[in-house]
Image (cartoon, rainbow, N blue to C red; front, side):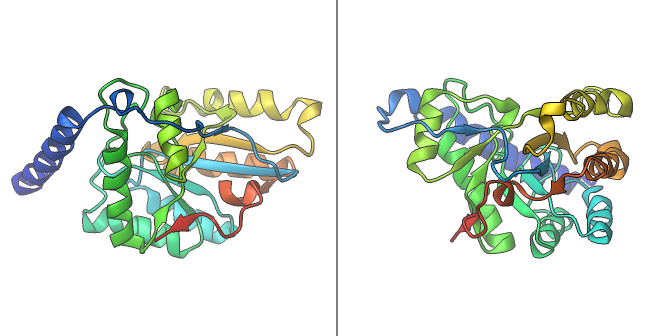
Amino acid sequence: MHSNHLAALALVALSAFTSLTYSLPLQKRNITGTPAPIITTCTVPNSFAITFDDGPSIWTHELLDYLAIKNVKVTFFVNGLNYNLITEPEIAAVVKRAYLEGHQIGSHTWAHADISAPGVDVPSQMKMLDDALLKIIGVRPIYMRPPYGNTSPESLTYLNNEGYKVINWVIDSNDWRHPENFKQNFEAYRVALQDPAAVGKGFISLQHDAQQQTAQVFGKLAIEYVLSKGFNVMPVGSCLGDTTGWYRL
């Protein structure tokens, strides 16, 4: 990696760190309202939302190639600064391609921040990524996924006040723990979908396109497995019956 690229990443990281450190925490802002509900399952019968977190990555293009061949749409919950910097041209191009090809782009905060932690500036985490995505794809996402699946009453109230929809999952591949052990990645799928009660229900699953083996292999295998079980794979918004409310300006 070139020194000027490292310097650019360092400056962005410093900016994000400064924002997180010196902004007033939600717990001290006296925020009032109703916490946003945490959505973990689909409401459309027989639907399955396969979602990818922590990207985009340099391998996401390969996953998009496969999705285009299969004519399958998924949801990408992206970060601004995590494994990559989203404003880098190569990475921004991945996000724009995914959006233009009909996949749903959701927020995973700017820097993969634990929004349940005291002192984390949730408004800045959301706004920084929203602003970056507005420049890349022309819209801001309404759907978001809290990193680690962690939330607090204060963060959920803030997110609800700002009109975000909070999405977690019911099937966790844990692919980041064992990225090359596809059998272990499939275990949560197998347990959930072999249950007779699963027939006709809706599911949301979690994996990470920032993991090379997931973007290149496991993500594709997961989709093939879900399709083989007779489910309809679609973005989170679609599996909730929402066809128009994914974004705002």
